[in-house]
Image (cartoon, rainbow, N blue to C red; front, side, top):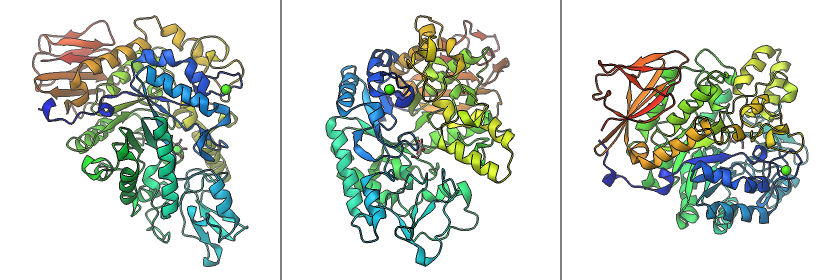
Amino acid sequence: MSKLSEIKRAWWKEAVVYQIYPRSFQDSNGDGIGDIRGIIQRLDYIESLGIDVVWLNPIYCSPNDDNGYDISDYRNIMQEFGTMSDFDELLSGMHQRGIKVVMDLVVNHSSDEHKWFKQSRSSRDNPYRDYYHWWPAEKGEPPYRWSYFAKSGTAWKYEEQTNAYYLHYFSEKQPDLNWENPQLRAEIYDMMHFWFKKGIDGFRMDVITFISKHEGYPEFPEEIQGAKMIDWYAKGPRLHEFLHEMNREVLQHYDVMTVAEGPGTKTDNVLQLVDENRQELNMSYHFDHQSIGVGERFIINEDYQNLVKFKTILSEWDEALSKHGWNTIYLGNHDFPRMVTRWANDSPQWRTTASKMLTTFLLSMRGTPYYFMGDEIGMSNIKFDHIGDYQDLMTINWYNLTKEEGGNIKEFIDSHKLCARDNARTPFQWDKSKHAGFSQSAPWIKVNPNYVEVNVANQQDDPLSELNYFRQMIKLRKQYLTLIYGRYELLLPDHEKIYAYLRELDEEQLLVILNFSDETSSFQSDKINGLKQAEVLINNYKNYICDINEVVALQPYQSIILRLR
Ligand code: GLC
Ligand code: CA
């Protein structure tokens, strides 16, 4: 049993974070690209959701090789998105509505068009040379490093100008910054102060676990090849020293939240990042559940929706952070498919019900929920048939590599209908007008044709819509602190359709029952008493059916939260 009096409460533990991908939220000037003034236009909608924090994907100057994750100026706003005064207006508009703003911090790499890199690549004795990682070609070829986005597949790019290779874990246009250099670190801390002084409320730190590189770039062991290298990238020897320094130099001076994007982070090392006693970061999010049934280059296998694996992983993560640190919960973001497609069922028959079920899950787990824009209205994967429709460099590069190797193109296209990142990046669906109310002209990426039905206007005033269910569920989470802080206990771990768990705080006991399948099912557990008399706190069907033997009958994708005491 957990006791509220023994828990260290914090606003960021009690917050629901809503993620906005600015490029796809609302276009205000008809160029087909979402922008800051577009978000300002939609502030009332954002407020109406009841969320507490908005995380904005990068809005800094960028040549957009990777949609803003390649930054050429950390202190200014991307022209396509607007101006600094637009940003200031957005920030104050959010604050007036009691919403905090978290920005993306992308400091594992910059753009190759950043002035630091332009200097760095110009000569070996340039003062900025050591802002990046270079390998002089007279030493021969550098030890292999895998790259997420490289056209060639390798993370070292040769430059004739200085006869050397530079390191880029992501694209050729995203050279990795050299954190060994104290001057570089000081510049980054200074830039962080710049944004905190403006009043932002935190940072989501992009691939922050990769910032420390192994000295001398040694060969990795033979079994650590390809995407397996990610786990090693996250084990750089000075990672925690750097983050502790960042905390001391910057973070501890403000009341802000931090969350690591933590590729390579596992249940056995996450506490090194988020144990409050270590003074590094508040939270981290992992990829373990997203990796279920997804192989190299996002080719999927039969485990794709394996519920038992899903429950096991999420329960292990809860356990790992149950005494120290604090967990995060998410089912999708701009790097993953739409949650309803990935974890449930996006067919017209089940989309609404299944979306509500997943919302119930996200908002009833222990840990801060990160909710991706559009999931509240049940947006689903667009599932492009043609490679030409994709905008994401990752999909395009992997497609080309597969083709060059004579790989299976049909399998690639089919898998990417389920897994490609662009599925989450299609324009937000506001109404049934042309371009879904997102823009006056053709958007930078196609709108999902289902926008005619799936849109805010349709759902806004319908009490049974997924949108209003989301609002209701947020209220419930705020009303019952047990949903935030209560102890979590998994029931029926081997059940292949049902995910059920208890949440307990002080004298209160809540039971969450979720049917993750398109078939009817039933729930029964000898650990539970009083099911029949329990109070139903929320239900995505009209009826709650419990027979005299305390067996609960569940409809497809039904979700219920019960108050047992
Ligand atoms: C993170 C971002 C992703 C980006 C990558 C490189 O994973 O979420 O969108 O492509 O880092 O910055
Ligand atoms: Ca625009």
